[in-house]
Length: 326
Image (cartoon, rainbow, N blue to C red; front, side):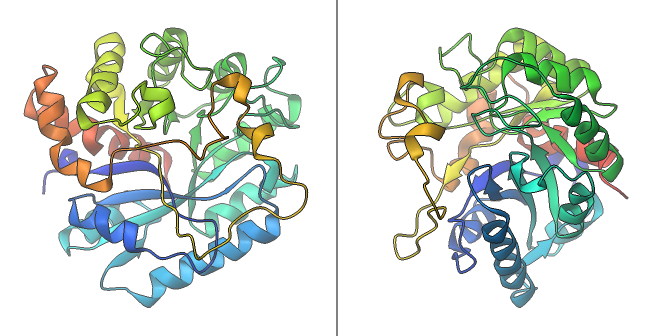
């Protein structure tokens, strides 16, 4: 397989429960995806929950070495693809699981977390969320960016406030990504990102991976054509080499309760005033099988087959090859 033909799903969500089924990951594998980044916690999830999820997910991967590989490097992903397996990495959505400790970054990296963004919609002591007051990156946040760079983790700016994301990109010595974000120019939503943010990401050498979430794509039942249209906007603005895919599918398994403990209020994290319907419960996405037709949809938007391959994974492979330890 050519390196640029790896298919890279930049963000997906299983239930945040250690017993979550990996059947959705098997669907990605069947659809031709070679690597998927799975969320293991957000700012509303306490460290006890995040660690239990990490332990459970790692155990599931280890129990099926014929199907899954916990990737620490791009070479691991390529080896998994060559053997018909799917490679998996983890991501954190928010800095609160870091407990304001710089050394937590390396600890999570040792457990398989390969990318992180610093705020999930709301402000914390490190960074601003996209649905909160504007402050900018904090002094602790600047140190955290350095820790992420030094550890060899992908610095993500999804869910982050606009000014704060620009601060992060200016502070980072490595390429920065948006693992699941869409152009504000196409759909007006606080989670979507401006042309300025897209250009700043590209200037770092990074990649903007567009999502398939209905709120952000702007259609009630998103299709591969909708995702391709958003990807084409990014490609036309900053170049195909800075465009990727992070469908951000959230898979529910009703038999598992992954609700954060305590006084968790979903309307705080997904406020109705910001354009959410019943928090996030009314979000819709294309299925994992959409990966089988994404290439054709991107070509229908004017890309060549080689350009579409870059968007489907070649660009994220390039950035990970630069950032992750060899």
